[in-house]
Length: 88
Image 1 (cartoon, rainbow, N blue to C red):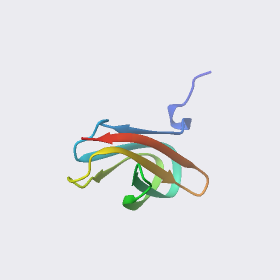
Image 2: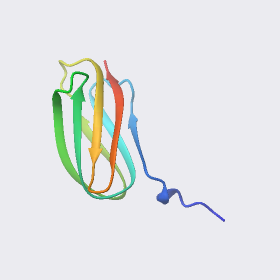
Image 3: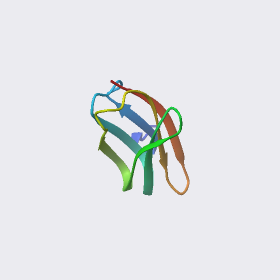
Image 4: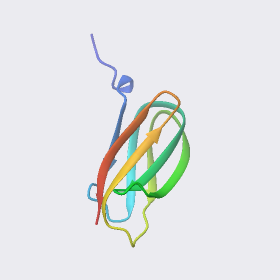
């Protein structure tokens, strides 16, 4: 049979490394989500909410004075995605 790409659940972050504007390509996640971005010590850098229905590309502007490795967490009622990215 044919596979439906809309059934895939994923989060892709780009560009990586990022200079200022971070994009989070979310697919297969439905409902309200919270996006948290932490530095490597666990300090919360930014947090925002959105509502996802299928596929959506979220974006957030990162502060200019932070650099290094960061962790993103996208949480919905059913799912949680985490990953890392580098800020130049």
